[in-house]
Length: 422
Image (cartoon, rainbow, N blue to C red; front, side, top):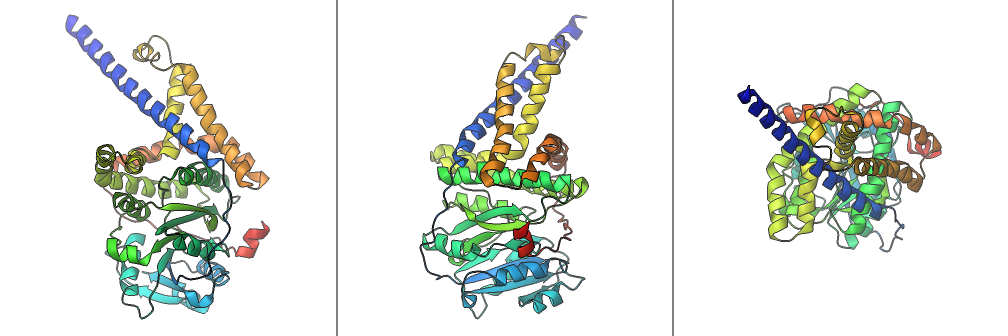
């Protein structure tokens, strides 16, 4: 009996300690996010100061994108930027449809790539960059777009301005072109509107590195030659952004340079996409998280420390999930359990304040971004959508060794004038 009692006390002590660490972790991350996000409230559009100067190579990786590639190229052709200062390069990657023909018909240069052993956007970008380095035309910068995107007319103008200011890596605003197709797409859109304002814009105001989004990304060509691409994992954007920070380069956020992306309309498709993102996140964290944290402490470099923290937890998704678990345990947990001895570490009011404050930031972000009034109805289902990140992240952790790239099918052939009217 005594052995069983000691065993029970040991188990209780272990649970107490684990729960305590979980509370401290989520509490610190929640407070950190609360503090930094406040700096996202302020944004003032910067006027264009420089005449067109830089020559851009626009790269569009495309795998079976015949339905959406045309409107993207048309939106690029409509840029308020001299036509002789940018070229559109579409990579028809392992295509079995008419992507090549559609892209040619709309006026893009098309490069056909066939390599079924190295699938994925990161490999396509590496392949195309190597071709451009041998290209007869010399480019000052590269801009990446996904085939399903639409691009605002002043996008290249703004990128030219930021390059002239001396910024070698610039991430554009990640908008959504089909927010009201389904409850899933509107929840994804709300997540992006919130992230754009209270995460990316806040970090720009604080002088921290933004998170690269893989599309709407502008990079100085000389930097690419010096660093190389080398980002061929499931989240090539995250990999390249982390390498930039490791080399002392701060990717900046251009809030007014807008690109619009197509989001999945079914929960299953959305979870598949997010699973790939999280698998890539864990893979990148395995290689870069500890070195960044150590370098941040050793060099007293908050930029690197912050990047390491971001790799430790995808903050904008997991904070609400983890703190919601804590809140439920505090409010609804029975009092005579092993957890009853640990709920006093941080009071219930603390978790209520953190959750309420973080959630209220979401409608605030919608208001600040002046989104369509219909988006506010999505707030009703948003808590459920945020909770679906939980099983996605858990599965991603246990399948993080998977490096198989899965194509997200795009169907919404929307023109930019339709997007503007909506």
